[in-house]
Length: 171
Image (cartoon, rainbow, N blue to C red; front, side, top):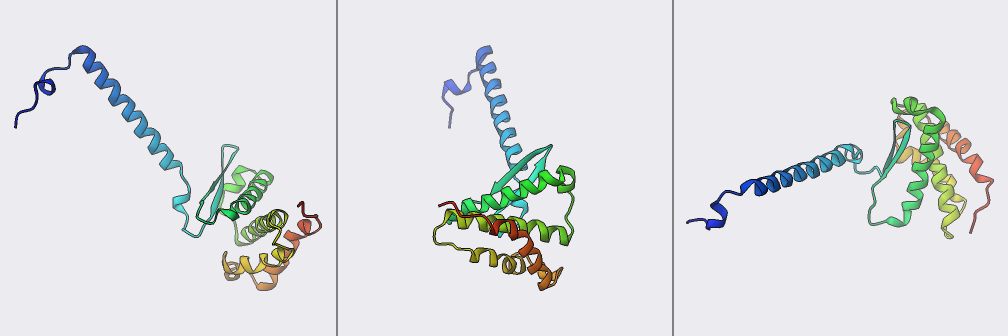
């Protein structure tokens, strides 16, 4: 099968320049997509993780997995925002190192209490019972029982939620 004459003749200077510009733009776009894919931190986490927070040169980043249940998106954002406040308090370098089980327990308890406080403030159907659910969540969803006793988990959850319990819900 013979190709049409328009496809077989030389492009000329202007055509070669246009083809080179096209290849450069295509390579630039591919590079951008590669950087975006490389910078996405969520694929490195298991599928049960709703979000993650990290610090990159004193800039705090939050990434959330948005699923079909977007009603809890605000609660998840409140959880990750609490982690940002914790990172600001301890600094980027300290936040970047792997947390000890005790540190992780305190961090997650504080974030879950902030999430519960947001849920109470924004959802009329939720009540103060949300704070009582923090300790069971730490035990079941975060697997804290392998490092801490149930009494310690309950005590940390109670002390983390104490500042939120006194606040009135804004409705």
